[in-house]
Length: 535
Image (cartoon, rainbow, N blue to C red; front, side, top):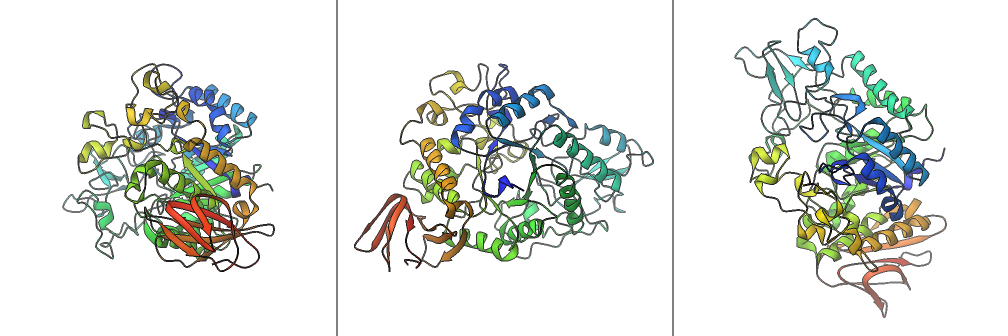
């Protein structure tokens, strides 16, 4: 089996914000198809589409009202088929976000479920009686604020929602639900899809005994709005029954030719790496998993080493997927600004680091431009948590603003109408038509090509080298090649004495003089050498 995904670079497209082809201010599938040459030109292997299914868009498509339909906002099934055809013609795979843990409250399944307790969909969602005093069944919190339970007077019961109250959780303990979900996945595989990105993959099952969560083991350093983080969330997610469902899903994908599934583990810290390992163990579960471990503010050598070594030890036969940004977190250039010499220097350093990691790599649209987080006013927001908790919570809109194509065009070439989120001058300044020789986009193309053509980086094993902070160092070794990768995660100059002769195969702000490697702020080097590690 080819298993194209093992060394792939996957490019995430947020459909609402990529290209508007209709002039309504919202991106769509035909717009993405128009821009396929840009994506293919980067040298990536696969496109990941954020949700495109029918939805009221209360959570921008993560509230699905029909799993078997493309939302008219994005163009319908014909536009989907044209996108698949165009991508495949350019050698690109396509995967789609599958939001299986919950639906919209406008889904026909939920509309029927809430009517009564004795119809054929009555047990398709997580319903529970109030406690004697009328309070919710458990103390579980919603990610978007408030209790994870909403009282429905029609049934006289609460239903579970880990996110918005309009996103009720499906009851995966019901085998009919599991069968129905698998049928929806089969529908898209039959249509030529190359796999799935599984949203909140550890949220499918809940504790059937409805036990309340204990407090967090260590007092979290969180704001008062993050009530979710104040609990040890052991009963509302990551339940043991999840494994059997993942195995059924894998059995379905194995009926097709070289399909890939990557799961989003909704967890932070070391526990997230443990779950990644558990969910990718062997060849009967997920092909890959990723977490938020590298999507936060931590930017030090110990953190990145712990993430990678934690996966190595926790899942020796598993496969990781590493990324620094997506549609849910501030853009990496802005997030790590305090460690940067400049926006461009941290963009290049992040690219070089990511392309050197063992596993599959994910990049989010706009990262190839060195894009920065957009500063928004309250009246410009669309993200529900931000609107509810502003200004304590900035929300996710800042990383979701439209892709910029032409600096001086209306809305930077994204749309002829007012976009659903604004295009502002700092973002337009990084438009594709401004990305010439020596640009961040040119650098991404160079690094992606280098990774693909390097046996060490595309399939070599990783061994870490202990250097003091802020230096991250490791070797990547295959039968054909060995590279030592060293990164300076700070603004300051650092030097590394080399024990053996070495040459810089590729680097930035780095040099070797008299056996000493000098790394300027945010500098890095890939070193070639003989059999001995040169440090």
